[in-house]
Length: 232
Image 1: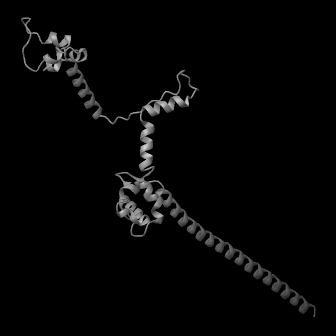
Image 2 (image 1 turned 180 degrees about the vertical axis):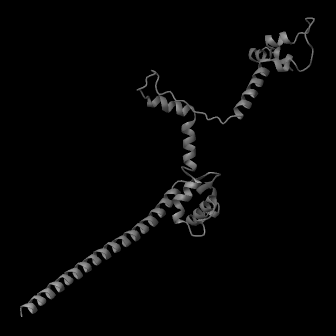
Image 3 (image 1 turned 60 degrees about the horizontal axis):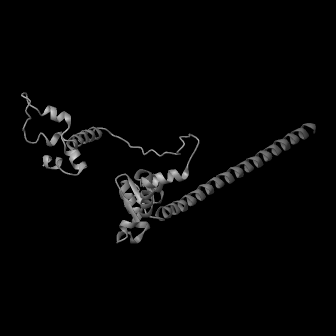
């Protein structure tokens, strides 16, 4: 098969199927004759060498925890203070980033980690769900918020992953609105108790002041009576 491809009239096919110079030298025997072992030629072509190097590279990458960063060129003048917006948008568009963001936002524009969702919206959960696992709490709360979510709309309203929960448009805002109502009620309750405490403290201070004034007048009156009795 390799010999057939190497004899092709297509320069690209014949080029990648032709044995490399190093493989030709290594394939010769001690007497200068070519080694006729089957299969050795297939692994020494340019395509075979490329596949081997690619496999070794993938094995090396799989042993690591690599994080890839996509670099964007800010301008064509290599200036640190220049920001070409159209050039950057074109790079993002060609890289597929804008299309990926558009598709993501069209389906589930909002997302939150499960732990953060549990901490943020635990206040609006029923008491039976507050101690449940994050994924169970999310599903129970959203099913209560959207009654038709248990039917055909389940896959379009939200999706619970291993670490995050994804919301359709407007669903997260409904959760925030309900949370704000609960927080407002709690704030009013705290304010009421604070005002009651302040009024009670002011009332106690007023009563103590009146008692002190009455006691002072009583002491003064008794002193006057004692003085009058002494004069008589």
